[in-house]
Length: 220
Image (cartoon, rainbow, N blue to C red; front, side, top):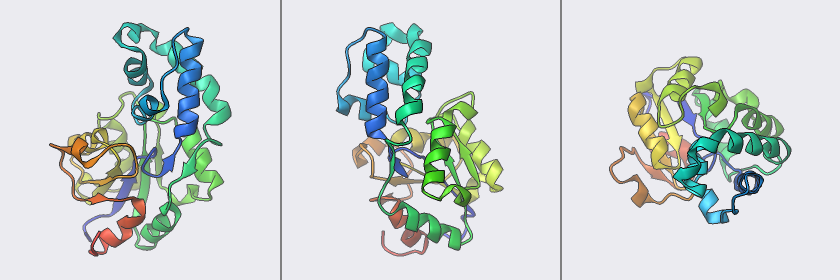
């Protein structure tokens, strides 16, 4: 484990839970488009996807050409609810401090917009712990395209083989594979182990709080 110089994290369901705000944003946008609201469970399953893909999952392929409308309505609501509706997951603060104390450089790569990630980290006094924060509005291609992850690796001053990417779903795993980055799965979201079948995963951990022990070679 000493080969790792940096740890890059996904945000939603890896470091934080924004599902109450996401549900509110999604259904506000759907109603604004004259579409029926979706269930909370259905919306939770879309967390981590791009907004165009979220619309397709919730409303169907026939609404593909309305993605920009969905994005506009989502963002208008998000400004008012996303930060207050996002909380850190248990163990995150302690784990981040422990990883920094090990000399590791830290980053975040998410499809979530940059500004709410930064605002949540600032509220929790964690912003200065991260050397790179890449949101969905910082890149042209969304995960599983590796553009964001490779940009974060460049910004933290590491290399793919010496960087660990941590995420909660198979899309994160595929992003890591395409970037040539080792992947660590946390089961703090809605994805189960079965959903990672066929993915290359170093280890499954209950949550981010177990990462320091994993890197120290202790039993996960």
